[in-house]
Amino acid sequence: MRIAEISTPELRQTQVDGQPPDSCPVLSQIESLIKQCEEDASSGIKLSQLASCLRQSLTRLSQLAPFANSAKLHVWKLSYRLWNACVDLSNASSIRSSSSSTADAENQVMLRHVSADMLWLAGEVSGVVSPEFKTAFFYYKTGVMWYHLQKFDQASSCLEKATDLLSKVDPRMVTDMEQRKLLLDLNVARSQIAWEVSDHMLAVTLLNRAKSFLFGSSHHYKALANQYLVFGKSLLSINDENKSYRLKEALKLMNDAFELCEKGFSTSRMRQETLDLTALKSKTLRFMAAVHLQMEEYESVIKCVKVLREAEGGNQHPCLPVLAMKAWLGLGRYEEAEKELKGMVVNKGIPEGVWVSAVEAYFHAVGTAGMETTKGVFLGLLGRCHVSAGAAVRIVHRVVSRGGEGSRIRAKVVAELVSDKRVVALFAEDGATKERVAMHAILWNWYVRNF
Image (cartoon, rainbow, N blue to C red; front, side):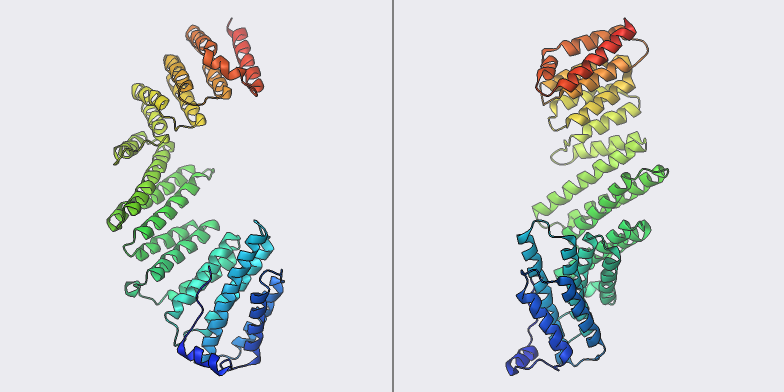
């Protein structure tokens, strides 16, 4: 988005006089290069060459420091013009192609980086309100763009400069909402980069530091809580020998997210803010329950599910009966597990893969004693939602592949299941050839082994 260009009484007077302040060849060259960028925003100008020339000119300009205030104002104006030209370039790229090349994107960010460095070089200037925040904003936005391009060194450089600019700011004296948001966003962005380069300790430290910039805003509480949750979830996707440690660390991060949601409710001023925090809190609790399940802390899983279900309006997320069922199985309380499994029949929101996995887990734990329940749940689901032939193959394979006693009972259940008209219809559908072959193979091999 374009930004409003600098306009002060002193700058307007110099424009009326027709001469740029402290006119010099370097400033004139920079202005000429920026003018090229403005005029040729859609002509495919060589951005890399333009960025290189601007960088060289800026280096020469730095050798002329210190500058008079009028020269600083002129540099600020040129910086804003360059930034807005970059916005136009970005918009033009998106119109020409839905996916502009990475090289073009990098060149555009290089130009923005030059724009930020121009403000850094000019420094504080009378006539510009909160110059440190404006410069920090340029560096923050540029750093985020470098981050999205996976250029973490450049991103860190920008964000660290923004941090240095605001290091002497007393947060208690900041009243502007955008400036408050920048203080929070800056720490969150730095933590994201630290996390990407596997410096998890620094990432968490930066998030903890960001708690000083919440300013009683529910939006800030939500943003920070969400980042804690994102980090926690990412730990769950790592499979290595330190799984136990990672689960504990993930749970700590999710606890922080949960606490921030809880505290954020007192800052909500509108109903939507409360709803947003409630949704994030529920999502966090669901992941916490999943972590407890992996850690075999089954009582904690049940507590999380209970809190979710007792929440205002009731939380009937499809994963809850699955989490509860597996926790009850872990506790050896099969009756409660059976209730949860049967409850899935009336929940249309549970994806096929999830409930099939739940049925398999139940049968694996309960064995022959749970066969009738397994069959009843599967047939019940046939009448409630779309069930594929592949799901039937998985269930039958699970039943027949279990060894031990109860072969007669298993034979009876399998016969009733595969002869049900609704199940037969699944395999009569077009595209079910592979599943028909698989089912025939399962039944034939089982018959040969047992009869």
